[in-house]
Image (tube, rainbow, N blue to C red; front, side):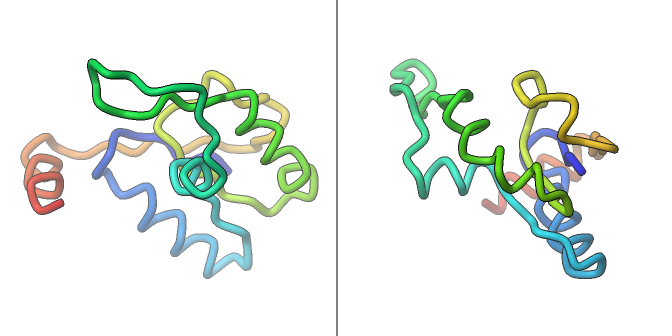
Length: 104
C-alpha cells in the first residue's frame, strides 16, 4: 500500500491506523531517510535535504518483497510499480490543511 499526499493531509495517521488494524508494517519514508541519512545533498534555496531516491529504493527492496507494508510519502514517481497493489492519494480542504500545518 502506498499513501500519498501533501504534508498535513493525514498520511501518517491513516497509515499507522491501517497498519495496526491489518497487522502490516508502516514505513514513513521521510523518517527512514532521516534515520539512515539517505540524502544526496542539501538544497540551500528550500533549506532542506535532497532525498537520494536510489538509496531509498535499495533500503526498502527487501521489506517490499516480503509484502504487508504501508509506505507513506509525498510522491510516487521513483518507486517501482510492482511494489504496490493500491495507492491512496489523500487530500483535504485548504482551510483544514492550513490549520494543521500552522499548529506544527
